[in-house]
Image (tube, rainbow, N blue to C red; front, top):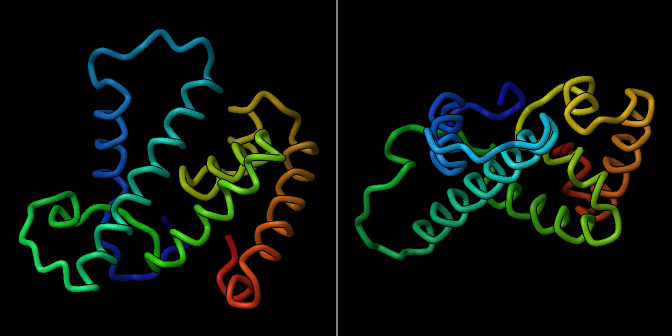
Length: 153
């Protein structure tokens, strides 16, 4: 969230609360490992941010419907809604061929983990995570095209 532009509608605390609710709140499943929990949390964060971006873009297109949602609570979101959606689409393509590397991207980009934290959550060595991250960033920047280069994932 620190890399995001001012004017977000989502705050980190509210995002974490929403993730907690989506993961089951007080009825948490039996997590097999720390990595499984963080993967589920990162996926939930990604879905919340994507849903939020889609809602805001729909509102801008004149949906004109009055509704009360998470955006009115001033919760955390990505900088630019269209950018979040573009990154998500590229990440979905990437996950088809490189699911482990895509998980690393989710943990870093959507969950805000450091490289070291993500490596630990995934159960891989830091040098491996560093190589995966370099490859993933290069792939995503290429996929996002010229406009992706100015907005690094």
